Length: 176
Image 1 (spheres, rainbow, N blue to C red):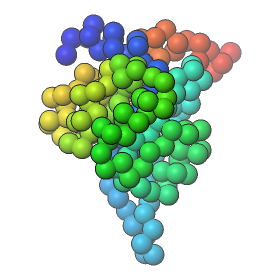
Image 2: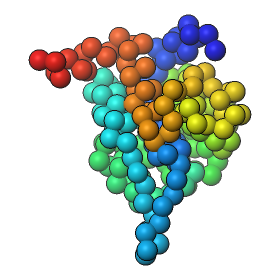
Image 3: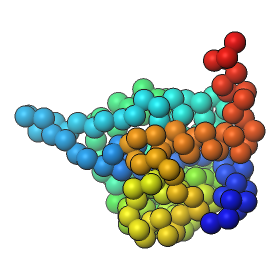
Image 4: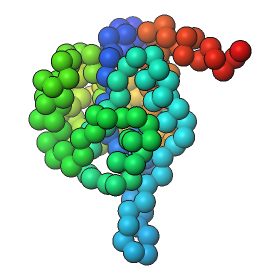
């Protein structure tokens, strides 16, 4: 992918839409002794999401699975666009577009596995995390350097903010 192409795509983004398992997490599912599902989230990814929100962009979660840990993390990050157990992600995306008064080219979706491909073909900026399956990487506009659950979301947030010229404004308070 030519650098110019993904930069142009990133400039148009108004909504960052994220898969969970393999993107916001490293893809592992851990159960405790009582059968409760545990998930591990990267704090830097969360900070990137907050910076994006401070710049006026919206963030949403689109996952094929349902987890109470995701509910908690979304609430903690102020993410109110949360679609879980979306077995047909393309249909869920169309619903987001209709209800959110947003165009597909204004959406960045970050995914990692085959189930994400129907969304990749519809959004303006499709991002594969570094450890995505081959087919997802082949269909992405951009591939992160960081793997899922280990800074990939932060990388995408920074990339969008820098391309849109908003990075300095949202980080200025940390330098004063």
